[in-house]
Image (cartoon, rainbow, N blue to C red; front, side, top):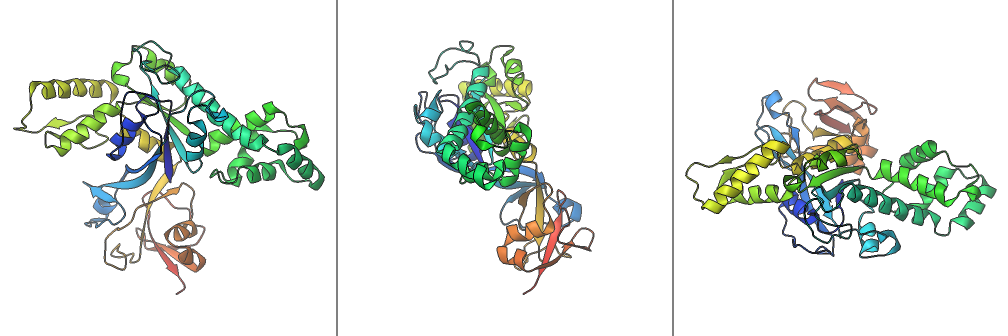
Length: 395
């Protein structure tokens, strides 16, 4: 799974990425600081079954902190997007190409309104933060529509003669964008274009592109710089999007560094932090921590971890499952207890999990065992969040 971190220049995308991954990225106060896409690993939290099952886990592909499993997700920080990027302006073509494999998007915006639409810095309140949301959606929509339209006339005439269904035509056009046939079918059903593709207009193409983007690249808005946002700005943005979270990426990054330095105790996603007893710091550091604490109390934390988890568990509707080889000891063949935590789409089956673990395991699937209940389940068993499953296959 890959989550793309997107937005116009100078809104704090790279700071958000650095805060989420603690990866070394270039952060500066001018447009196009990020030219090449940065890849890193963030984490989403899910309850680990270890406490409920009364075992001490030995994680392999993830970590466990006080009964909370920290599951890795791939993050991609791409070049800033400016208006008309779909036509090649700025670094638009590279930006959009980088997004091809993204499963979901976090649109980082400057909710304080202190950067203009091109990403040039100003003062809080100078600009309308709602434009950050609407223009980015439009750019991606036009990009998808352009891919659909390029050379479409000939394809449409062929489809009309052969009787090919609209979803088949679209799916073939969007190969390589990590868009499934089911998602295309949903978009076609909702837009209901003319059955004859030769009658599709530019408006039809854009409507299809918009719906395809909504179902294949769902988006959450990170309302960054919330600590300096004028009163009312957060409510304005919430009025134009269904899912938005106030964020303070600079605060998250600073707290992680302070925790590494031994100044504070802080777990990503917590609503607050604690200054360590006897921590040595100057007045400037102490004042900064007080400022951050007050803003975290007002906004319910820094919001960075919340964005990642809402993208994974809200937008993509993923659940966590734990494959094991011994349903009694909850171990793999190395003896590791609850070693792996996998994120899978809600509605996935036991056979789907087998294929995710290994293709051969899926091909030779016989049955599965629910390690919690010790009951045998079939290939079509629908996985539940937190399931511990043993896959039985032919050798």
